[in-house]
Image (cartoon, rainbow, N blue to C red; front, side, top):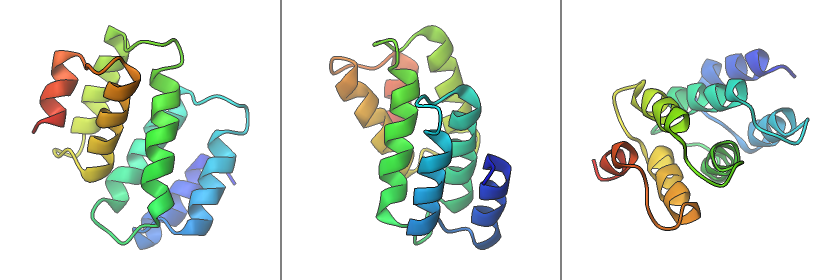
Length: 123
């Protein structure tokens, strides 16, 4: 299933169930890497389902996949900071999944985050 079709399915009921988590995982990891289009897709899904009764695997997949993209080169560079600030701030809030993401990035980045991301984590 394409990312566009997956997004439509999730947005239709505003919940990510366990079957959709598995479908999303299969789709985004099909080539073994997470690219920018897939990161943006994940944030679009997350913004559509924030605060709803999602499968627990959703937060795990979201955090894992975005971390895989950002930390692919072992560091958080200025382009990645800009991307994360834009995507996290797109809906005007830092939700639970996004906080988990920032905490995970901090752990993978030697216990620190660039200032802009640290501010978002502590908001």
